[in-house]
Structures are given as structure tokens and as C-alpha cells.
Image (tube, rainbow, N blue to C red; front, side):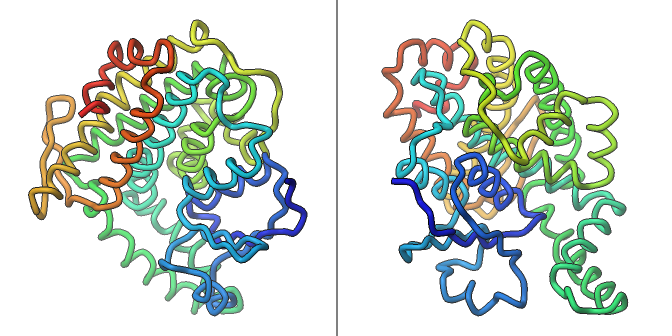
Length: 334
């Protein structure tokens, strides 16, 4: 049944997961109000929130949803058309896998670009401060911006971005951009001429990176197809059909092999093992180099969820062959 009463989406323009959900709502034509999270709506937010996290979607029937992927999955189940899932079950799982990569590993790329470089950190902090104190003067916003920067920069190490890992994370983002530039030269979206779940996940991170000065200059100069896709995903539309695996194979297989199997899944597996062992930090070898950070419970839940989806989809024709060939299967079948 089509929803007519608007839901209320609490989010932030600087949150990749918030804009991801907003883009999805626009694509589905689901009526909604965008509520920029701030002091003016703190009481309403706290009334709804189980956790102090955005995005938060308050539904007309009283349901409250948090966490971008569960929000999208819940809404998709209730309003399946137009679908964000390729009709081919194999391609659907690959889309889900790439979306998980975007949410968990792609966030390192975005977060590192935003907070490691002084110019980008000051830009992001100023924009956050403007939303925190919308009625404040320049001096008040400047003080708030300093506080934001001082709070966020130390979080780099917490998400695994520091001097010992940054070169790998930065190279990962450039490799992703290279792959997407070729992919979007042949089609409007990742799996064809209509947006998939993977598009929403990747776009949330890359759109946010593009709003920061340094990665924006990089994308604008070297990645015109990615830039056009970023703009397109602000209000995505069906412009054709899904592509076949024969057409998609070169770009998607490369992305799975280098990024998903090469970085994301071994890192996520090591994170889960560290939590199970009660470790405070863990180190995993990625591309022949040590990558270390603190383990995080959310990432372990993410890995368990994508393994659950794989178990449900593994009989899809051709799926295991693709996952085996790209190196993903060993991590998903564990």
C-alpha cells in the first residue's frame, strides 16, 4: 500500500547514511520531511531514538527505524516497487555485498579524507557548526567549529585511519573511483540504468567526500562519469533496465576482487575474531602490509548479516562461481 502521510527523517547533510536514506526515499516516491538534526528538534529526536544516532525515520504509524540499511530493507519490503534489487538473484546478492562494503570500508575512505587534511577538516567542522548554532553569530560558530574538529579528528584512529594505514585507504578510494569511472561510462548506475542498493551505499560515502574540498577537486578533475553519477543520485530515477552479468562482469568482478575480497572481507573477519578473543586492538595483513585498529561490535554484526544473506542466496545460479573466482567465497562461507 502506497504511503501518503509524510514520515520524518532526522539526519544531517554531512552524514553519508542520512543522505543515503533520503536519496532512497526520493527514488521510491515516499513522502517525507527532512529534519536537519539540531538543537531545535532535540526533544522530538530523543523521544524517538533508541540510540543517539542518525538517520532516524519516524513513520506515520508510530514505528521508529534507525540504521540506514535496515531502514531501507524495511521500507523495501513494504513497498517493493520500483525495486532497488536486480531481478537476477545472483546480481541482487552482489549488490548487497557491495553495499555492505560501502557502509563499512567505504566510510574509512570518506572519514579519512574529511578529517586528516586540515582544509577539509575545517570545512566540515564549519558546516557542522553552522547547523549546530543556526542562530549564532560568526564568533559563536567559530568556537563551535573548533570544538567539532577537536572531537572528530581523534576519531580517525578509532575507525582505523592513521599514519600507518592511510596510504592503503587512500589508494583504495582511488581504485574504487577508477573502477566506477569505467562502469559509469557504460551505464547510468552500477548494475544498469536504474539504481541498486549498492548505488545508495556507495553514493552516500562518495557524495560526502565530494562535498569536501580536496576529494571534490580530485573527482571534478579526473572522474567526470563519477561526478555525473553523484549528481544523478541526488534524485535517482529509472532510466532503463538492469544489465546482464556478461556486460557487468569486468567492472563488478574487479571491484569484488580488489576491494571486497582484497580489503573489506579479510579486515571484517579479523575484526570479528578480535572481538571474540576479547582483544583491544587487532592487526590484519592487507596487500602485504599490517592494518591495525580497535575492534568494533557493529562491524561484527555487519559481517554476520552479509554471511546470513549469502547463506540464503547461495543457491542462486552462478553466484558461487563468481564469489569463488573473485576470492569472496572463502570469507563469506566461514
